[in-house]
Image 1: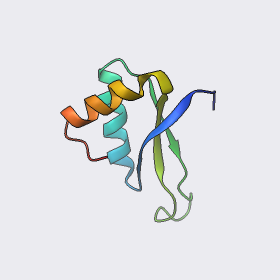
Image 2: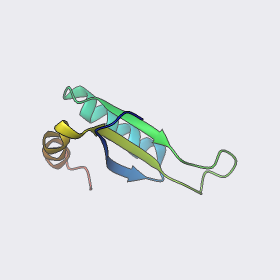
Image 3: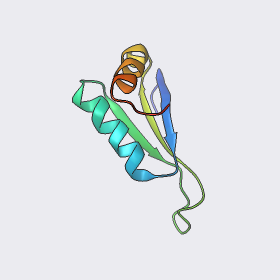
Image 4: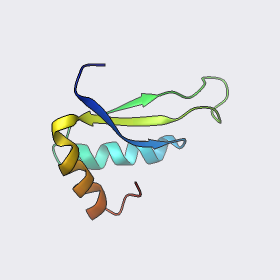
Length: 70
């Protein structure tokens, strides 16, 4: 991953991470998912959402306004 990306959200549920990504993307914040789950056992590992470091403050504000649990 490129420099200056920071993790803003982690979940073991793919759909929760995807919702966070979509909310951020709808607000013009580039976000990517990093799937660290085991391919054969979905109960091991997490899905992480990363954003650019300079968008961190705006992303936190958007997540709070959209009542996304941090």
